[in-house]
Length: 113
Image (cartoon, rainbow, N blue to C red; front, side, top):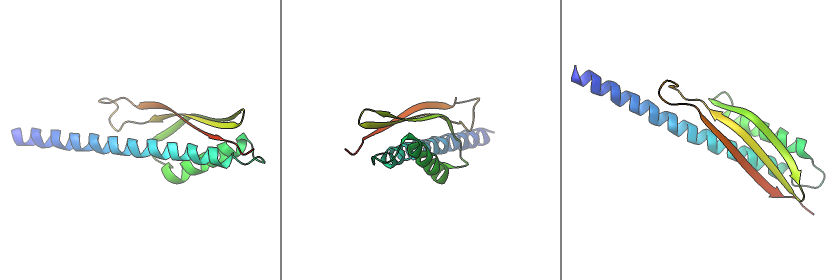
């Protein structure tokens, strides 16, 4: 009986660590997508829509169909900078044990002048 309980807890710990690693990957993917989005809006002839389109494209290609949920995504000009902000939720595999992670991520780049 003790062996079964210890094995069960070991497997649960293994799955929780795997969930943490997947969440770290998804957070990195979202940060990379924001970086790509602001880089797409750096040239003078582009606008904030290019930033949004590129960010969505990268998120879909890197982390599409995963437990990453983009709650809000904005790109805006702030003087000579482009600023992208994303509010995301990283869904937990065991919501009864661990809540979802809710993050706000930012990226910015200076526009060409």
